[in-house]
Every structure is written in structure tokens, then in C-alpha cells.
Image 1: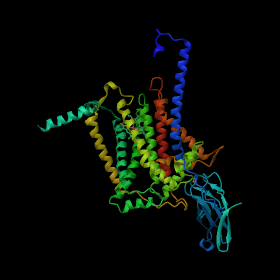
Image 2 (image 1 turned 120 degrees about the vertical axis):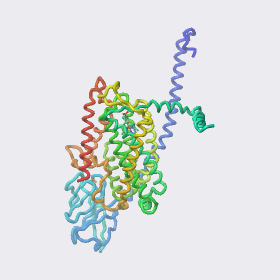
Image 3 (image 1 turned 60 degrees about the vertical axis):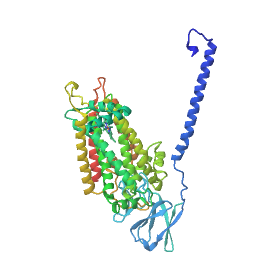
Image 4 (image 1 turned 90 degrees about the vertical axis):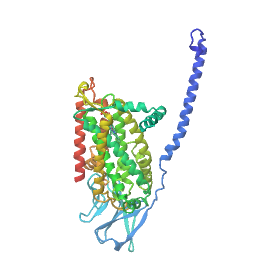
Amino acid sequence: MQRNEPSQPVPDGAVGAEQNRRTLISWLLGGGIAASLASFFYPVARFLDPPQMAEASVNEVAAGKVQDLKPNSGKIVRFGNKPALLVRVNDTEWKAFSAVCTHLNCTVQYQEARREIWCACHNGTYDLDGRVVSGPPPKPLEELAVKLRGDEVVISRRV
Amino acid sequence: MSVKELRARTFDWFDERLGLREGRDLLDHKVVPVHAGTTWYYFGGITLFLLAVQLGTGILLLLYYRPSVAEAFDSVRFIMTRVEFGWLIRSIHSWSANLLIFAAFVHMFSVVFTHAYRRPRELTWLTGIVLLGLMLGFGFSGYLLPWNQISYFATKVGTDVAATMPFAGPALARFLRGGEDVGAATLTRFFAFHVAVLPMLTFAFVGVHLLLVQKAGMSTPSGISPARLAQMKFFPSFFLRELMVWYGVLAILGTLAAIFPWELGQKADPFSSAPAGIRPEWYFLAQFYTLKLIPSHVWFMEGELLGLAGFGLLAAVWVTLPFWAKGREGEGRTRLATGVGVFLVCYLFAFTILGYLK
Ligand code: HEM
Ligand code: FES
């Protein structure tokens, strides 16, 4: 209070010191509040961020028996926690792809009549090599390898 | 003591403690302008009414709904088939959500075409925009809750659109999904958003929105001189009319819900192909169809990104409308605003229809 009153002049240095002290104290106070707020909100922000799930990294899955899939047909099988599309092109030829559309993640399907892979979400189509034929998908489907082990169809990541 | 006296004394008792008189005076003095566009004043109220319907039916649904991947679909089926009038309550909640968004859109466009956004109502406009965003959020999160095929894949696409946004996109998608993919965690989150987060925000914003409307009074379209303006009292004249409108809306709602009960579809199966005919709710159809049209690569950009940039730009223009739609006189560029409004209505209308047909 006093230092504001002209009738009681205070030496310049003292005003400066007083000011400095006040500035320092408000900085400390402000900083303390900011730090404590940060310490409240940091855990909340971290809490909102979902924990990283270990991706079940499979390299190989058994996708069923040969005789269960007729020629010129396809089916969705689990490949780890993602869907894969297994296609029996004809009696002897098999193909497999990640079934996750490269556009916006829908699950694709095999279209027997047109011998194409089709995504219902935005009408994207791929050929039997996984290449984009039409529609919005920007990239080809990831191809997987198919092996026959006796009468068992086995899908694996390509190396 | 006569009944009249008793009433007066009760009133006085409460008035002394609550200041009822001030409220009564306020209500007494509130007026609504009467002119060719008065009808549009009803749409904010219709939106508000439908919001109340959502609150009521939503709480009822909460009594039986179970927010888990294993149980969600079956609990909704249980509501539809076993709970008495469950089908009606669910159907009303779904229909009312759609009518609400429609009413909010009509309300918003009427604000644009009558230029009610002008000074000093910029904040009313902004809170209204936030409310519309919240309503769309309700629609998007609610759509997933029955956990059926269509909604599962619509949510996959919807959150993936968010993921293609530059910079914050992937983090936002993770936040929405509660993980890398749409799954159990997404359902839990969407449930929390739908029944806790969004309602709280909505009530706060509706409160501010109405307070601002009350503070500024009803605006009148620019062509009409304030001196010659006819008015009616808000209470009881306008209020009773609004009440009749609500009755009408309720009748429409009940009819729709009873004659066209909301479908449930098939339980979502993450390991099946996206079903044909998948599409989002109609109020996202225009954007959905636009994305469908854009080729995968345009010039150097991914098509997706270009679409998003376009939407972003349009949204920015729209949100800031009260700030650029004024000239030096405060009237200047309102024509431009009308033009942008007409363009937007035409675009939304045409693309929504095309999205349905294609
Ligand atoms: C949940 C959604 C909403 C509710 C419940 C709501 C409610 C209301 C109500 C009851 C009124 C007063 C009556 C009327 O003018 O119709 C009003 C006025 C107004 N609203 Fe909304 N509203 C909503 C959304 C919006 C949106 C999306 C906008 C625009 C972006 C908006 C902008 C305005 C403006 C500028 C006014 C003042 C109109 C005038 O004074 O003539 N509101 N709102
Ligand atoms: S998600 Fe497959 S075409 Fe869009």
C-alpha cells in the first residue's frame, strides 16, 4: 500500500526490490498452480489413451479343409486378430489376402460371378492378385501365402 | 382463508425466498415478433422438445441395455421382443434422434436465411454450432450401441475417416476406438460418450444457448422496420402455440415409430465381410457419398484427404459465418451468406438423395 502514496517516497531501489519480490512470488504461485494442474491432467490424458495391446502376431493359421471350400468361392478366416480372405480360384489354385480394405478398413468379400474381390463399403474392387481394379482403395490388398498340408489349407505371411 | 388468499400467500412465501416475481415479470415482458417468417421461430423449440424426448426414452432404454460386445445386441433384441412396449421406446428414441437432427438443421438454416446470426448474436450462433456437433456425436455414438453389422462397419469407416486426418488423425481415431480397431473397447467408450459425456456437455450448451437467446431477444429479419413490427406476448400466446406444435411433432413421432419400427439387423461379426448396402445414417450420407465419388488419387493427394480438406474448409466458412457475413454497415455481405446457405442446402439435399439411390 504505502509505496503508492506520493507523500511517503520510498527510495528507488526499495521499490525495485519490492516489485521483484512480488513478481517472483506471482511466478512461483502461478508456476505452482500450473504444475499442479498439469499433475492433475497428465494422468487423465494418459488414462484416455488406450493401452497398447500386444498384437497377436501370428504367422500361420489353419484355414480349414480343402473340401470345405468349393472352387470359385471365398471365405473369411481369422488371421490373428484381423480377418483374412481365402479364395479357392479353381480346383488347384488358392489365394489369400488380408481382408482389410486398404481404403477405410472394411472387410472385403469374394464375388463369384465376377471373379473379383469386392468391398461393400464404397464399392472398391480388387482382382485376384489383390490389385485395385476400381473404386477408392489407394493400395493393393496385402497378399498372404497359401500352402496345402494334406487336406488342410494353411495361410501364412509371405516372406 | 379462501383458496385465492391461500394461493397468494403461498406465492408470497416462495417469492420472498426465490424471487418469483422477477421471473414472472421477465416472462410478462418477453415478446415474439410477428411477421412472414414467424413460423421459423418454432424450430428451436421443436429441437428442444425432441431433446427432452431423447432424454426420457434414453433413460428408459438404460434400464435394459447392456454395453458389452457379448450382450449388447441381445439386450436390444430383448427390449424389442420381451419388454412391454420396448419396441416402441426404442423406436421412438431412434426416430426422435433423426427428427431432432433434421429440426436442428432446419433451425440452423432458418437462422441463416433470416440473418438472425448478426451482431449481437454471434455467440448464439457459435453455441448452436457446438450443439449441432454434439447432436451429430450423439447420432454417431448411438448408432453403434445395438452392435449390429451395419453399425459396426459404419463405425469402422467413420473412425477411419477420422484417422486419415493429417497430424491429429491417428491419435483421434485411437481415442475414439479405445484401441487400434473397432471392438469391445469402442463399444464401451461410445456408451460412455453417449450416456454421460455428451448429455452433460449438451445441457451446459443448451443452457448457454437459451440464455443468450433470452438476453438478445428474438431477432427480426432485416427487411422489417422495428417501429412497425407486430408482436405477440411470449407467454401465453407464443408458448401455447409452441405447445400445440409439440403435440403435432409428438403425433408424427408416435406414428412413425409405430408404423415403421426401427430395425435391428444382424449381430455384428468382425470376422465377416462388410454386408452390401452398408451406409451411415442419412445425416452423414452426403459426406459418405462424396467420399465414394472421389477417386483414390487426385493429383498428388490421396482422395480421402482431399475430401476431408474440402469438408474442413466448408465447415470453417460455415462456423465463422457471422464474422464474415457483415459489411461496414453490418448488412453488407448477408447476400453472400444467403448464397452459401443455398449452396449448402442444395449440396446436402442432392448428395443425401444420391447417397440413398446409389
Ligand atoms: C440441440 C440443438 C438446439 C436447440 C435445443 C436449440 C434451441 C433454441 C431455441 C429454443 C431457440 C429460441 C427459439 C427459436 O429461435 O427457434 C433458439 C434460438 C437460436 N438458435 Fe438454437 N437450438 C439448437 C441448435 C442450434 C443450431 C445448430 C444453431 C445454429 C448454428 C442455432 C442458432 C440459434 C440462433 C442464432 C438463435 C437465435 C434466433 C433468434 O433470436 O431469432 N441453434 N435455439
Ligand atoms: S472401405 Fe473398402 S472401399 Fe471404402
